[in-house]
Length: 247
Image 1: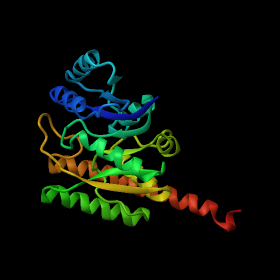
Image 2 (image 1 turned 30 degrees about the horizontal axis):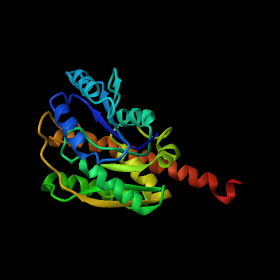
Image 3 (image 1 turned 120 degrees about the horizontal axis):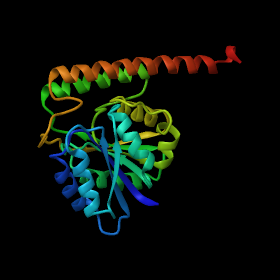
Image 4 (image 1 turned 135 degrees about the vertical axis):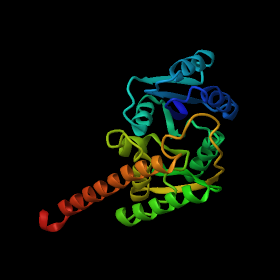
């Protein structure tokens, strides 16, 4: 059993992998029994080879997981979480726009809460106007539709207990970009969310999978909106089923 497992989904991130490995090695405090699960999420470039090289050099720290066909962002994370051995679990992105060291900050903040139902997440502080506009709009819509306060949904990292994972994500988490939203919804409804500021950097290599161009951002937004209203419908059905007249 590890104290902390960090899952990083990697889709066509071959050029970023060496940087990821270096940053991750530097961030681990002495004495922390931690593992980093690198998920090759159906990449079509040299990501698989790059990840294998990292694991070969540091098998004590890195664990490889390979998915043949990309099913979605959420599926990559959920696959990594399934094999993770940590009592506390986290995920972040491979683009290095959020420093991996933020995971350690999140872990320390989590330990101070003494609550296995809490989810700790980053809160981006320096976003450009257009991306921030999309994020704020999505947060408002999600909050109104689902009845829970949800803000900066895509911010990383996200960190929580093994208990939280088993209760809410193991068999119910969505396979696409809606996973961040779903995890936050579950945390607000059944526990709480604690945030801390993170600095959002520019991507070093490759292209954004869930943002980048306005076209890509709109595509992802439409998928998440679809999930929001499907989840809202499910919540209403469950609430109706629990009502006195249905007993």
